[in-house]
Length: 303
Image (cartoon, rainbow, N blue to C red; front, side, top):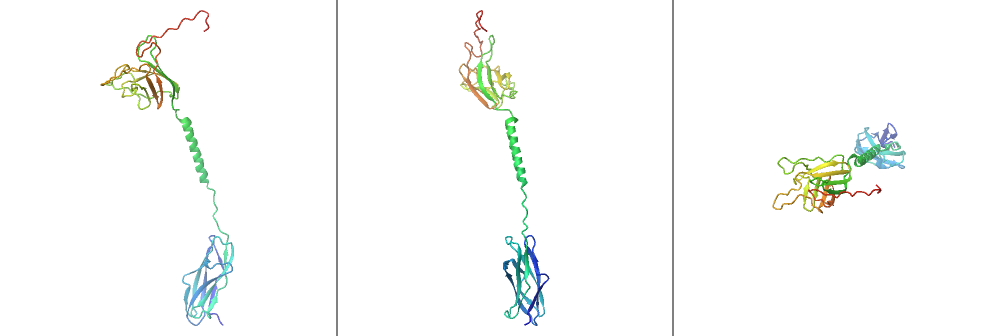
């Protein structure tokens, strides 16, 4: 019995690319003396799977007598399939006489290559970011440890009267560390203000407070300026302006004199230290300080 259809192809091998995709084209010819509608069916052989191959277009074709049609097949093999050769074929069947009129293509071999997986490059950017973080941390540590002046620490505070034979405000002396090589910047009160000769300081830069009376020295609101006698990173001496010893204005006037036993607080660049005004006997603040003279040493006494 002569065949009803003839299926031909230029090659029986279907090569795939690195992504395991490819295609091939077959020619289906009707060699019967009548027109016919035919169905196309893909049949895998061995380990091949039917869903790897798809017919491009309609799976039913109308073929004229002695006519032909091109059938393109699209192939896509999953990446987890082992490399190798897989076989399938195309079956053509006449819809009106499927038991009598049919044909099969030559076996087509799909050559499945090794998966072309992209190489994973080492993420050098991670190393670069890590190095930048290390450098930044080191810079922060350096700046914190060495970049700026250390916070001041006040360890002692004392108030003493003027030297023997002199009158005037007492002298305040403080010791510690981190005072800085120069004092904070101060400002003089305007001419119409009540204080002359001293400096005022903003915020917590520098001021003294009598915690008993609440009077502050070295701030613009108090009219009581400070005079810096000497300054070093570990020691400072302060005295008071001409307004020291005056009386505050208002219905409840207070003396601006720091009295014996008053609790006092010195604030320097945010650091503070509290102490008590202790004048050597019989010295009185803002008055002549009489100090006892040293007794003569007996002859032959050790120095």
